[in-house]
Image 1 (cartoon, rainbow, N blue to C red):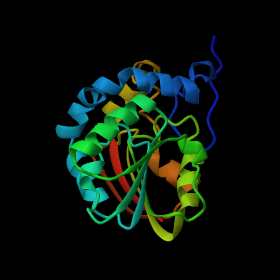
Image 2: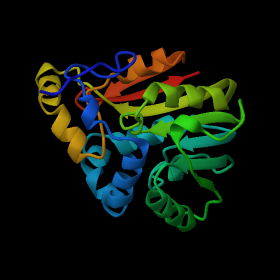
Image 3: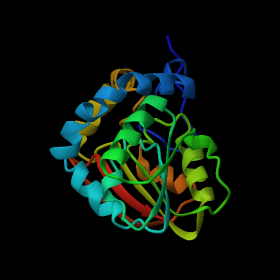
Image 4: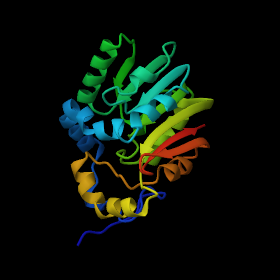
Length: 225
């Protein structure tokens, strides 16, 4: 019988992911390299039927100045950043970054794109005016450390913009997530879909200035500083 232990902070509701099932950063990189070409098909339902694309656009309209997009994936955020911004994007998966570079070229955008671990950002303290991350803290092995890194590289008074999903506030759906947390984690490249995004952000020491919930109570937009 597998031993199940809780993570630091209330990072997901019970049942937790068993320790021997958790993916390492190298395993996550391999998983996302494998699905890079079909990633956008996988998220189509959330994007267009649960309202993620519209909320993504609204949230990222608040970004300004020097922007860091953490775990940029295939570059789904790129069209929504202000034209006048100075944009840097990072992701763990080289193949996801290849897709991101193609999107940047199609949009005629000049973006600094680097392979980088969100938990070990290679930037000086206070380097950016805005740090963004969408649908990514659910997969970071240590999401609190990744959020603390976002806080570190964001200048004092800057914005950290998070779009994430987690435990629904609809009882029937939350129960379904809990019953299927491990199969979903295994089939969705390490996605913990019953975590608590608000708790993660607070535990990382960020101050929430705006929060909205949508999409069957699973999705959150969070503006923090």
